[in-house]
Image (cartoon, rainbow, N blue to C red):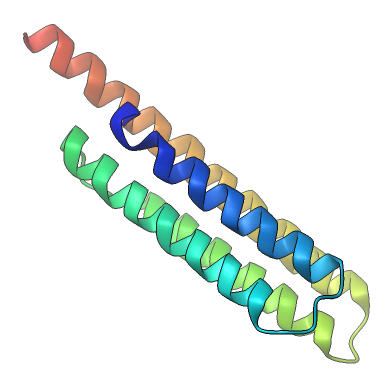
Length: 120
């Protein structure tokens, strides 16, 4: 995991840069491209980390998928004429599910690391 941590930080930097560009009202495809590159970089990090730790993902992937779905739903609701409370609720639920995914996957990775240390 430590070997690929730079990918995680790079992905976070791209994602945060894209969000900041969107907030600063950059009307071009640039913010979307930054967020997409950040997401792909984080997916690569996750894949490499899970392969290295020899951990098989399970139900926690549903947290990630549903979290992403709610965040995308929140973004779509913001662009419609619906109340902002619906969009904000969907975004918060999505972010919470993604955080829950991170908590579960980090626990799995730590458990796998402890097991591998005790086997050696």
